[in-house]
Length: 131
Image (cartoon, rainbow, N blue to C red; front, side, top):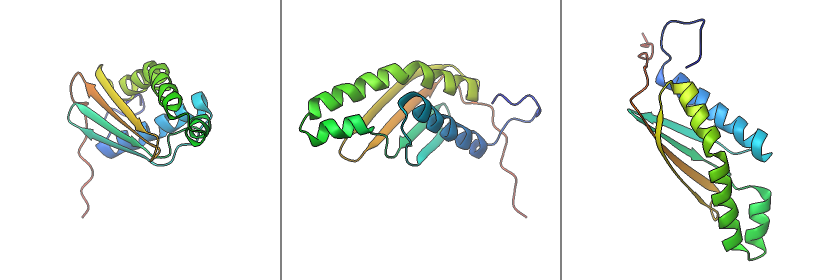
């Protein structure tokens, strides 16, 4: 994680919170859309994201007017357009190369799932033990 003031690696919880915040900012700044909760799980060399309420107003309008196919195309095009920024956020935050990204959205539920495969697990610090 880009934190020059600390020599200790971050905990998994810190990384997951940072990533969720950065992905929410990406949606807000690039799509002018406030997502719902972003669940972020780091499992070894895999990053799993579930983005609630990820469907934008134009996509919803297309679905409501029976243009589901066009809404799905818009969704796929948006995913393609955001991919370089998703890679950049992930690589900067985790200090690991992104090997692959798989993403899909369900217009009916408004959720997007993203699976990111990393070159290796990020360096982590154990969480502080409760006493």
